[in-house]
Image (cartoon, rainbow, N blue to C red):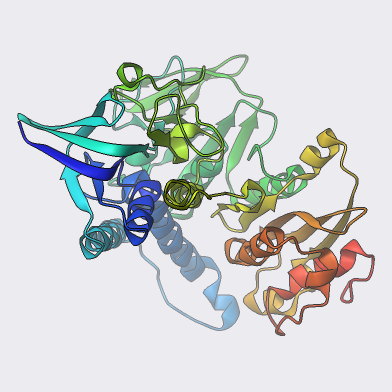
Length: 463
């Protein structure tokens, strides 16, 4: 049997895995990356972040052409939907980016193994692909296997009518009625896509609110916007089963009438992807939810075995996995590697977008931290007016004693881009005064952050 030796072997070719591999080679390591899928990029690139954003962009343009361009004096005549072309564009984008990752591995001389990686012991990994089997040895092993769609008791996805986000990214026709179970980012983003394209969308959520973990006030505002857009919501709804009856799907929930639609999207979160990784054999411990347990340097309970990204829990975000991958290999090579989790932004790519970084008001109140708050509405921003998109606001939270920025939360146009400034500010330990005194170009949406910073001290200029 073939055996190869490396300084570092990484299981998983997603954002955390391939970025860690590249950084490790920059630091002089001999690196191998194992990915069982033929296309690199992981869930995020293949069936997650990238394809969903492609459809969000296309569907938003379709809706704008139908309903908004006329207000700008742009006449387009009758607007039609070519769903097949829209899907081909999405697939092409995924293919291009996946091949780009493949090119990066080659450029950095990273050995790639296509197959399923499994720990035999710390430092020993088996890679299988069909009847082929090879064994790798490494001083260090990094688990970056990501996550998969979480299930819900009483529901068995059939890969077609009742499915996960994977199926919802590739429907061959627009559903008449899409029932979404779960009001998190995935459910709301894909629900928005299909609503724009003509589906009736009903969202069922177990909790009494949407977007758990985001700022409660802005989530409440967003809920009102989604309802005005035509999405229907049933909150505090405990779904007990979903099944296919003839041409319809039937979703039952405690204390409610059954809901009937032609497709069901189960979007109740993510679960760690640890199937057949040999964790027990290698002595890698997991917590009660199945996530791999690690210390502050991403070390597992097994000597020389590390883990990052979705498989260790926390915010399940591609960029969080990237930061952890870089920090982990830098720790191995230099003795220092750190991630500031308070500076990791989170974005929901609906319209309007919702973005957040740092602490929420609820978290600060629970921790007993005194803070001051400044807010500025987009309706008072000139650039937002010119865009014709004035929904939402910027909210900034700063320490009452030091003025250090603790959290920024945005509901509004291009919030996902605007949050970057706030993330940098928190990373650098900036105060609201620092942002308030920084010049922002006029007219730009970014001026809303400056105004929110001014509002922390009660001196906003344009409200």
